[in-house]
Length: 366
Ligand code: 13P
Ligand code: SF4
Image 1 (cartoon, protein in one colour):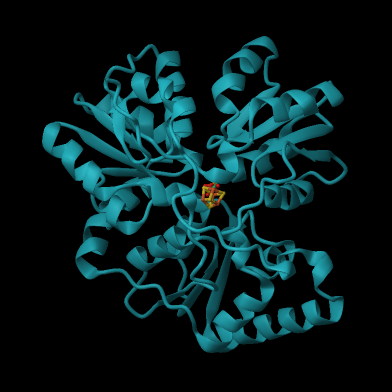
Image 2 (image 1 turned 90 degrees about the horizontal axis):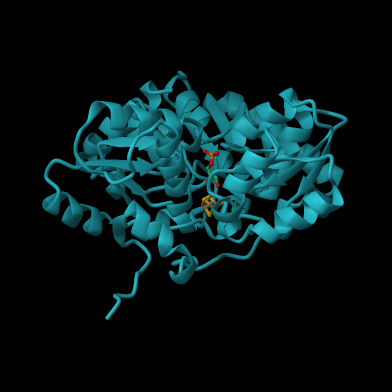
């Protein structure tokens, strides 16, 4: 009898990839409602201006830094001191002399700051519902069991994991440096390599290894996916490409559309499709000669892409690609977070000590 593959299971890469379409990779946790004021049209300009002025005043008063992920509502991005992808925000967060770090993102990113912070710093998250479906697939217990069976194994965790999973990992990587970290690990270790929890990013890694002339036999993958990216499917891209034959595609590496689209599109039309981090997509928007870009990621990324490449046309691959977790961080919540110094994110000292090792490696291998 063929065993049912469950989310969080760890399989040799070939088996994991073959099981993508038959495994339930739906969100393992509750999906919160997207607040109405996450959209600029639902907040008056007077209200927005008041919140922004108060945030600026409170930042000064509290010696605080506001960091925002690229998916944040535009007004939150505009009032932030730094906006970027998960790697950039981790780099920014470990550097400053600020006393308070408010990070409008998702909680695993706040945890990174809580692990890396200086003793006097306070890390705040505007809303505790800002979880992540992908991070919730990762299972620290299954990683421990895999390590027991593979004492010479190396664990590489994607940044979208909570601190208990990072504490079991040898390396951590973000989408922005996953190719570099995976290459580094394969070139510097001989044993099996476990990558998780994003099976689509695992698929990307497998293709990259084959491109480098490496075997994928050493690669093991954990079954997990982001419910927002997993739902961006090949037909979304095919429909938009048919409507816009002059467009190029910038997609996030977590996308479900990778499986069927990556190879044919990349091979058939040189440079027409790129899989990148959110920040990589912004850079690509600025640098490409194309005037039309189909964006295969959370729709929030279109705002920083349009700012980076004004005048170009951005077409969402799916208008439904909205991350309800990220969108909990409205302008009001950022203001309340600074006003009331909430919600403080702390990490158990022992876990933090262990998680610091792979995070530091992620920050070094870029
Ligand atoms: P980036 O590191 O590219 O910002 O991706 C994080 C993420 O959660 C994308 O959904
Ligand atoms: Fe997690 Fe997906 Fe949201 Fe990114 S878009 S934070 S991977 S649920």
